Image (cartoon, rainbow, N blue to C red; front, side):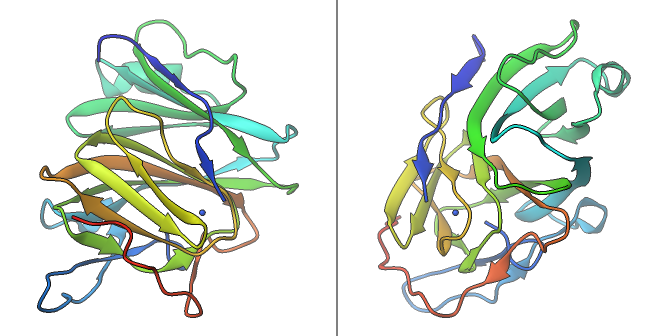
Length: 226
C-alpha cells in the first residue's frame, strides 16, 4: 500500500455469532450449510472464517478508540513493538500488529503503518475483549444473521464486503471508507463483486458478555446483490 490510510467512522448502527459468525454460500438454487468460524489451529482449507485472536485488553477509559493496523518484516519485530492492547498475527502473507488505542497512538519504528480505523464508539465496561478474525470467501458467501454487544469494524484487502443491517446497506472496498457497525443491530455480511474477498474484522466488546448473538426476529431484504 502506497501510504497509510486513516479511516474516520462510516458508521452504520452492527459479524459474529455466539462468539463468532457462521458463513454460508448461497446459490440461486439453494443455500449451502453454514460454516462455523473456527480457531486458526483447526484450519484445513483456504475459504472460511478463522479466529486470529480473542484478546482481553482491560478497561478502556475513553468513549471511543481506534483500530491501528501495522505490518513488520518478522514476527519477532512485530512482537517487540506490541503494547498491552496489541496482538500479533501472521495473515495474508504478512506479520500484522493489530492495536486498540487512541487516535494519536503510533506503533514503534521498524514497521509499516497500513491503516487507522475509527472512532469505535464503546459503551462503559470494566474490561474489554478484542476479537479478530480473518475471512476468505467467494462472491455469494454470507454470514449468519446476528448482532454484537459492541462495535464491529472491517478492513477489506481484496474483493467487496456488503453489510446489510435493519437500517440499510453499506459496501466496503479496498482503499475506500471502512464500515464500522455499532452495537445492537441485526446484520448480515455478503461477499459481492467478481473477486475473492479477503479481509479482517474486529469486534470490541465487554469481556463479561459473549461476542455476539444469533438473531431470529429480523430478515434481510437481500440488498447485497452479487
